[in-house]
Image (cartoon, rainbow, N blue to C red):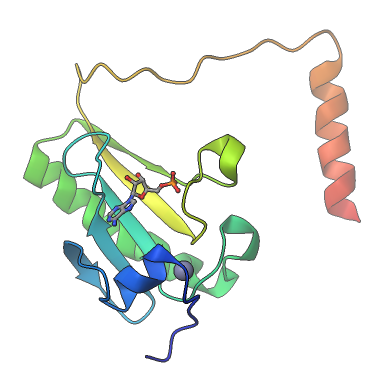
Length: 142
Ligand code: AMP
Ligand code: ZN
């Protein structure tokens, strides 16, 4: 196998077929599998085949291919599960919910009455929003 691997990584083992999984779609750079503990049934994980940790080291040149891959699968999941929508997301680092440190994206079918809660929203203090926007922009200028 020519892909970059980490021998201790569970997703690398799935990619190498050392651990079984339900493969939905595969090409030279990505593999889509059913999540073993779905948020909703039909929950899919898209794994990049070259081991990297998360978005911070995800190869930019694979972006377009990822979107094409995800769009194809998402429309199939919606049809297969009769979903009303879907989430496409990525957890980055443990505080954000990342449990497996091999970059992957979640595709989760959603239903009108599926009982899942969306994130609660917070309020900014006066002036805080503008200050933070400036701070982020300055960091990106460096
Ligand atoms: P994350 O929290 O973003 O790192 O997501 C990791 C996901 O991997 C979770 O939703 C798990 O249910 C899923 N998972 C863990 N082990 C396996 C496995 N062997 N096959 C399929 N999905 C898995
Ligand atoms: Zn890996």
